[in-house]
Amino acid sequence: MQQVKSIPRAGVYLDTRRKYQNGKYPVKIRVSFRRITHNYKTGISLTEDAFKKSFEAKSPHGQAYLMKEEIQGHLKKAEVIIKGLNTFSFGEFERAFYDVRHADQDLFSLYDQVIEENKAKGSFSNSEFYRLSKAKLIHYFAGSQSVPFDRIDSGELAKIDKWLRNKGLGNTSISIYFRCLKHIYYIALKKGFIGQNQNPFNSQAINPYRIPSSRNVKRPLNVEQLKSLLAYNPISGSPKEEARDFWLLSLYCNGMNINDLLQLKNNSYRDSKIIFTRGKTMSKTSHTLKINVSVVQHAAQLIEKYRNEDHSPEAYLFPVLEGVSNDEEQRKRIKNFTKKINQHMKKIAQEIGLPTGISTYWARYTFTNLAKNRGASTEFIQESVGHTSKRTTEIYLDSFEDSIREETTLKIFEGL
Image (tube, rainbow, N blue to C red; front, side, top):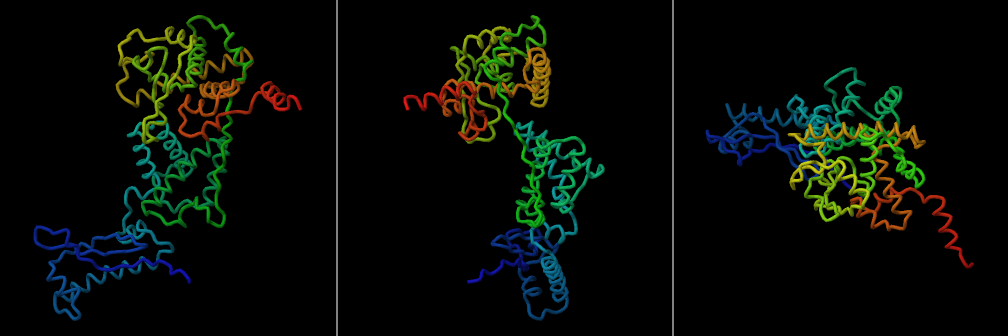
């Protein structure tokens, strides 16, 4: 049996749920599509009796006739708009029916909305990604502050991709910016501002644009490189010493990222344990995922070396964020501190022959792979680093070191 295509329909509706002080009700145009109904104001209001004598009457006279003509004019306009839309969406219909554009029916306005939503829930990194994505598009569109959704199609995405590459950006940055843009179009589609065929990321398009995959190579230090870093002897009290120590502290604390490390309070550290909740997962999970870190001797020594003089329970374990009054300033201070660590770790890497791309993230990857190569299960590592899925943990794990692989292979075939 052939499936009947869903067709949007328009009708006239007296909204008796909304009674005005003068006893009248608003006359609205009701549009239904795929079991969803939206009502649109016409600016006309009537009593129930006047509505029956005008619009519902077969042959009204005088003022009732004129009122019916006016209402039918709104209905006719709605029907013409529906017929003229290649792909129906309530957002496009509303835009045409009122002959105006809603503030958030603009690409950049919706970007602003998402940026503010991320800031409100504390996702400052995400808000920054969206801000940068928007900034690149503004630059591409020659400084324009307003771009309609239908301005970008799959062909335009390919042009933007080429333009970004000419600016020196690689797959990783382009991937991040386009994933932000893709999410903006997803929201626009969900709100009904656009139809599916107006989504430039529609996989069913004739020539769909494919977001480049970022390589996202995880970079752990191997055992010999780690020994070299441990043997490094920086000048006491120097920025290099601080950078090396906090990088190692991150490693010793299950690869804890610097953001979480700096936000630890004194009451998080007791009985040779650190118990905390990852900031990255707080807004993504329905339950609080607490991570338990067993503080080894080397970590305890580093904690005491840099610990806040104020040992009260609610004071920060490290004084980096002392005196910060708001989330935005806190984010900036964490970002600057992390940047300083990375800058000096790169200088250390040049001195002792480590990979020069080393960063604080490498401490996390190094922990996971060191744990794996020493026989820890994936489940143990997953719990230790606070991943919500085993799949995420597996992405972090590098292949076994050659010596471990050789030893394991010999054991597999031993006695054969």
